[in-house]
Length: 633
Image 1: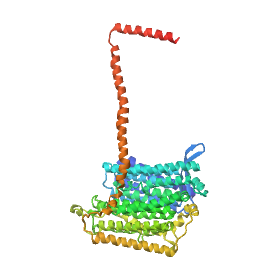
Image 2: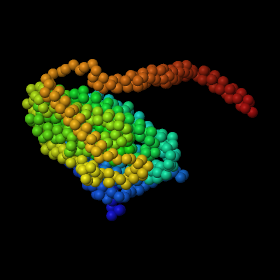
Image 3: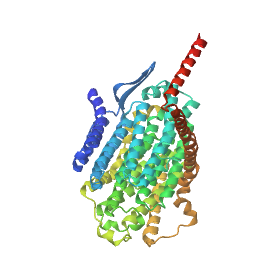
Image 4: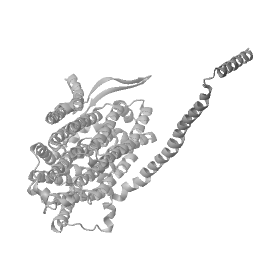
């Protein structure tokens, strides 16, 4: 049985890779339907294998050593695969949500000329994310880490004929490289400290430490820098809203199942290192909570349906990082899971709206769509309720587990977390009301063609809606008289870190009071949203109060980065081009050419056709050779 499970680890990787190769190499000669079904099927098979893995690693891990990759003196790195309960959870999310997004994409991308290329990229994306979570050491993880960065570049810039999409892809790629440099430096430091990059060796070595040293501080802070790039935290978050340039299924895959969850997973996997650096955990909690607040304030004033959800993702990732900083590793993974359900649902439902409106994304030109998009409207409402944290939907349980952990760490973090939760409910119901309620505000021609999406798109929406409702059952709190399934399932992974970082549970009465405050506050936020955008909204542009201009302008972060980094780099590159390239390099090459031409023009007179001149030159040559011979002797 153990050997067969080991082989399954390899097969989970190989099936999406096979789909990528077939679609990429033979895509032009295959029908769209075949490619779509193939790409979806290979991910579904990996999902089935992931279920088998998940049911067999609750108390122990499995591994598969494929080959020795690097060997030098006493240093050895193997290309090996590894799975425990944390890996299994990520496998289920990546393949399960990824499969639903693939199926949805068959309908969404049906008329796109790059259909086959799209699915080959999607399969490759899933392959690299699986490699990231199934690796047994940091170096193999880094391959997957860079691979998802590459795939995000390819998919964000999928419609490359529009130059704005290319800029968005480059922005995502470059900003992720900044974070990746931190990750890479951390790997060098880990190796010099533990003489290994294998998780087992590094974590065993870390578990023996009893004091917090500067080395551990720098290892963890560099790992965190890598996570801020991949998971879009301050200051490396501005690439994620621009990533909406890609097709909507890409947005769903990046935001819900793959790339942005990588940073959360990496820190959770390295939990034993982080608990030995409490100062870094505090930094993570602070950065996470401020990212959550910053993104939430921006989301309130966005009018692009996808960008509202993009800033929502940044905000929710902030909550996950805050939970990690509070030492609630299970809480962060719980919210990662429920967020995968309702954020994939919200993005795909938004795609259904965009599909129905022939590409329109401005919510000020929508309204009243629940009459014609009944399924999309219903599932979007379910996703909105889930992300707002209203019981008994999934987001309620995961969000309040995070808020409780923040209260335990510092009540101020809890207050800020509550503020972010209220804003989340406000802007998400603003989005729902402006899109689906009221009267339609778009043009009459578009209104004639509004229709519900085909079943290949709505069925995945329904499945995700169900998961958004019942997903909270993975982490029912103990005050309900049940066991926290996910906590027990992940306990072996976080056993060593929990022994070092002992946490005290809140009294039941205090925990219930926090929950009541949260739920009541969320309900008030929803009522305020209803009053503004249903009761008082007139469907016309209103002038934003000056105090809110900073939120509408997104804190001018893009402009600040443009001024501080982009323009100086462009100026330096232009100066380098004009001085080094044109004057020095081109000047050197051109002058050599001029010298050769002038020398040739002078030497050509030697070939004048006069025999007397040739005899004369021959005699001079003989005399010169004679003199040289005498001197040498």
